[in-house]
Length: 283
Image 1 (cartoon, rainbow, N blue to C red):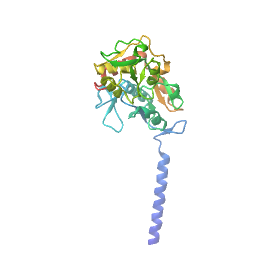
Image 2 (spheres, helix red, strand yellow):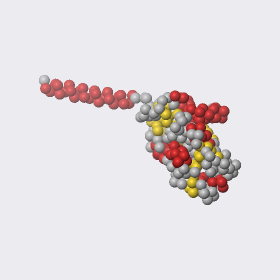
Image 3 (tube, rainbow, N blue to C red):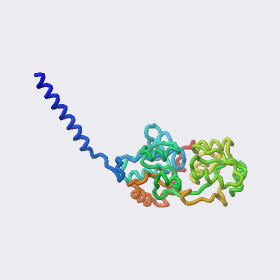
Image 4 (cartoon, one colour):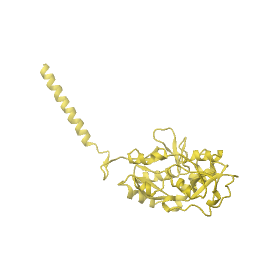
């Protein structure tokens, strides 16, 4: 009897092992891209959610904001609207992953996120480690300063001689400060909210920003304005354009470019104007 029981148990164990193997072989919920990496039905987008009007953090889903992964907060802004369009056309569920600016490229390279949509410029340096799609917005650099301050009427870079100027860490914005004659180049900052506080408290006289961010700053706080420089920074197109950051060899690149091409310049401007109008006051 005991021998028969052992034989029966062994047979059952064999059936369970075979069933488990068969189950693994039969799963077809994901496929692989040309690099052998599994693709899913989710598109994980990295952004810092702190760079209004491109992206910001809010506490509800108003104005089309998307819930931030692993959080009770939501991300809104121009980048979110672009991300929604890309995810929908790819037939994927959009997931926003809030990541510090300096951690975005590493997150993409390690597979934590599938793409970066964060107002990121496709510079030559970044292209050494990741790829980019076609541009989805092009702007220019201006200077955010205190309203009524010494630099409100500045028209040229020379007008900022002696000024304390900063910009975001690891950005072209910070690099171009060197073009200002006699400038006091302050330590780069991690994010734009910190730079706004620095301007308001007088810790710096101004910071370099893309025009939409400057408009956003002035709209959010009446103590801010931005300069319309007649003789401004010398920059290349790649330095004032933003594109989607993707891993090298990403099989979705052509499709993403097709999606972006389908968004007219008029629609892009409409989306940006809406983002500026919808940003939370504290952003």
